[in-house]
Length: 336
Image (cartoon, rainbow, N blue to C red; front, side, top):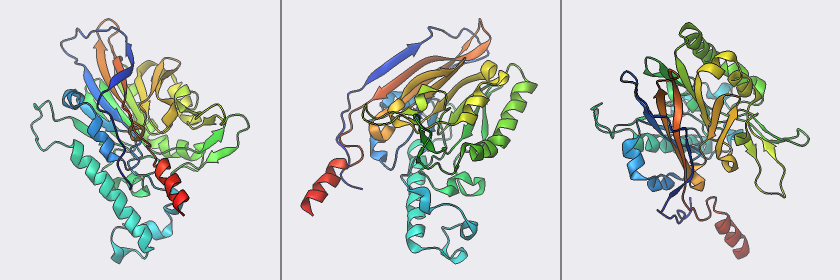
């Protein structure tokens, strides 16, 4: 709610990372990805994405937190095993029902914005859209029969490249003493994330082991804990919070992922936008669009090494005035 933030339309890349690799293969092509994350109900900020990038992208991927729910009150339990959007099936609190409906509306609006009306696959503007839920989205978005999200799914791009999607986040812990700073959702611990990720991990590893020339791009909401892109450090007066998953770090360090993972793209940790590595695997935090950040990535086929690689990564930022409405909240307090 509130007045949409003032934004500027002039944008320059914060950072341009290029390996200066040009594809020469006639059998494999390059693929471009427009990457957004952590909208937190501020979809008006999507209007400031450069139009040329939207036209050029083969894929648009949202990495979670479409909504801005406090999920402590929306944890699935025995009451919510049915579809809570139908009152006749479920005796729930009306405020919860309204919240769930609002969340579904947010997700539907996001779909409508990026899913093209044209079904012509030759239409360059018909970028394919995928999204995963974050820790501020509803539990419905983790249930395959109730959501349009790609959580826990695999999607082939071509005969040698596929995408894997996994949403949600673990708790955040203070780096200095290990004290928990905030809850995870829907995972209360890293062990829960590991258990939930087992099915996807087995499917990915099967494809990579059976076909040594196949590669995967891993899209997640939270990133690996051993990457600097998951360190939440707001300012020098605050503690450093580790917001990533150790289980995800361990997975990226396996032989197959080191050899065949093109990159891990994630969001969640707003201040840590940028690129790092887990050994050979690039880890990229695409930033929060609510705070005016998003990314554009080209994945190219390097003929010499006979594999796909991140060819060009651009991180963009536009100005957002008071992204979380703190000035409005302060003004209201003064009025009281």
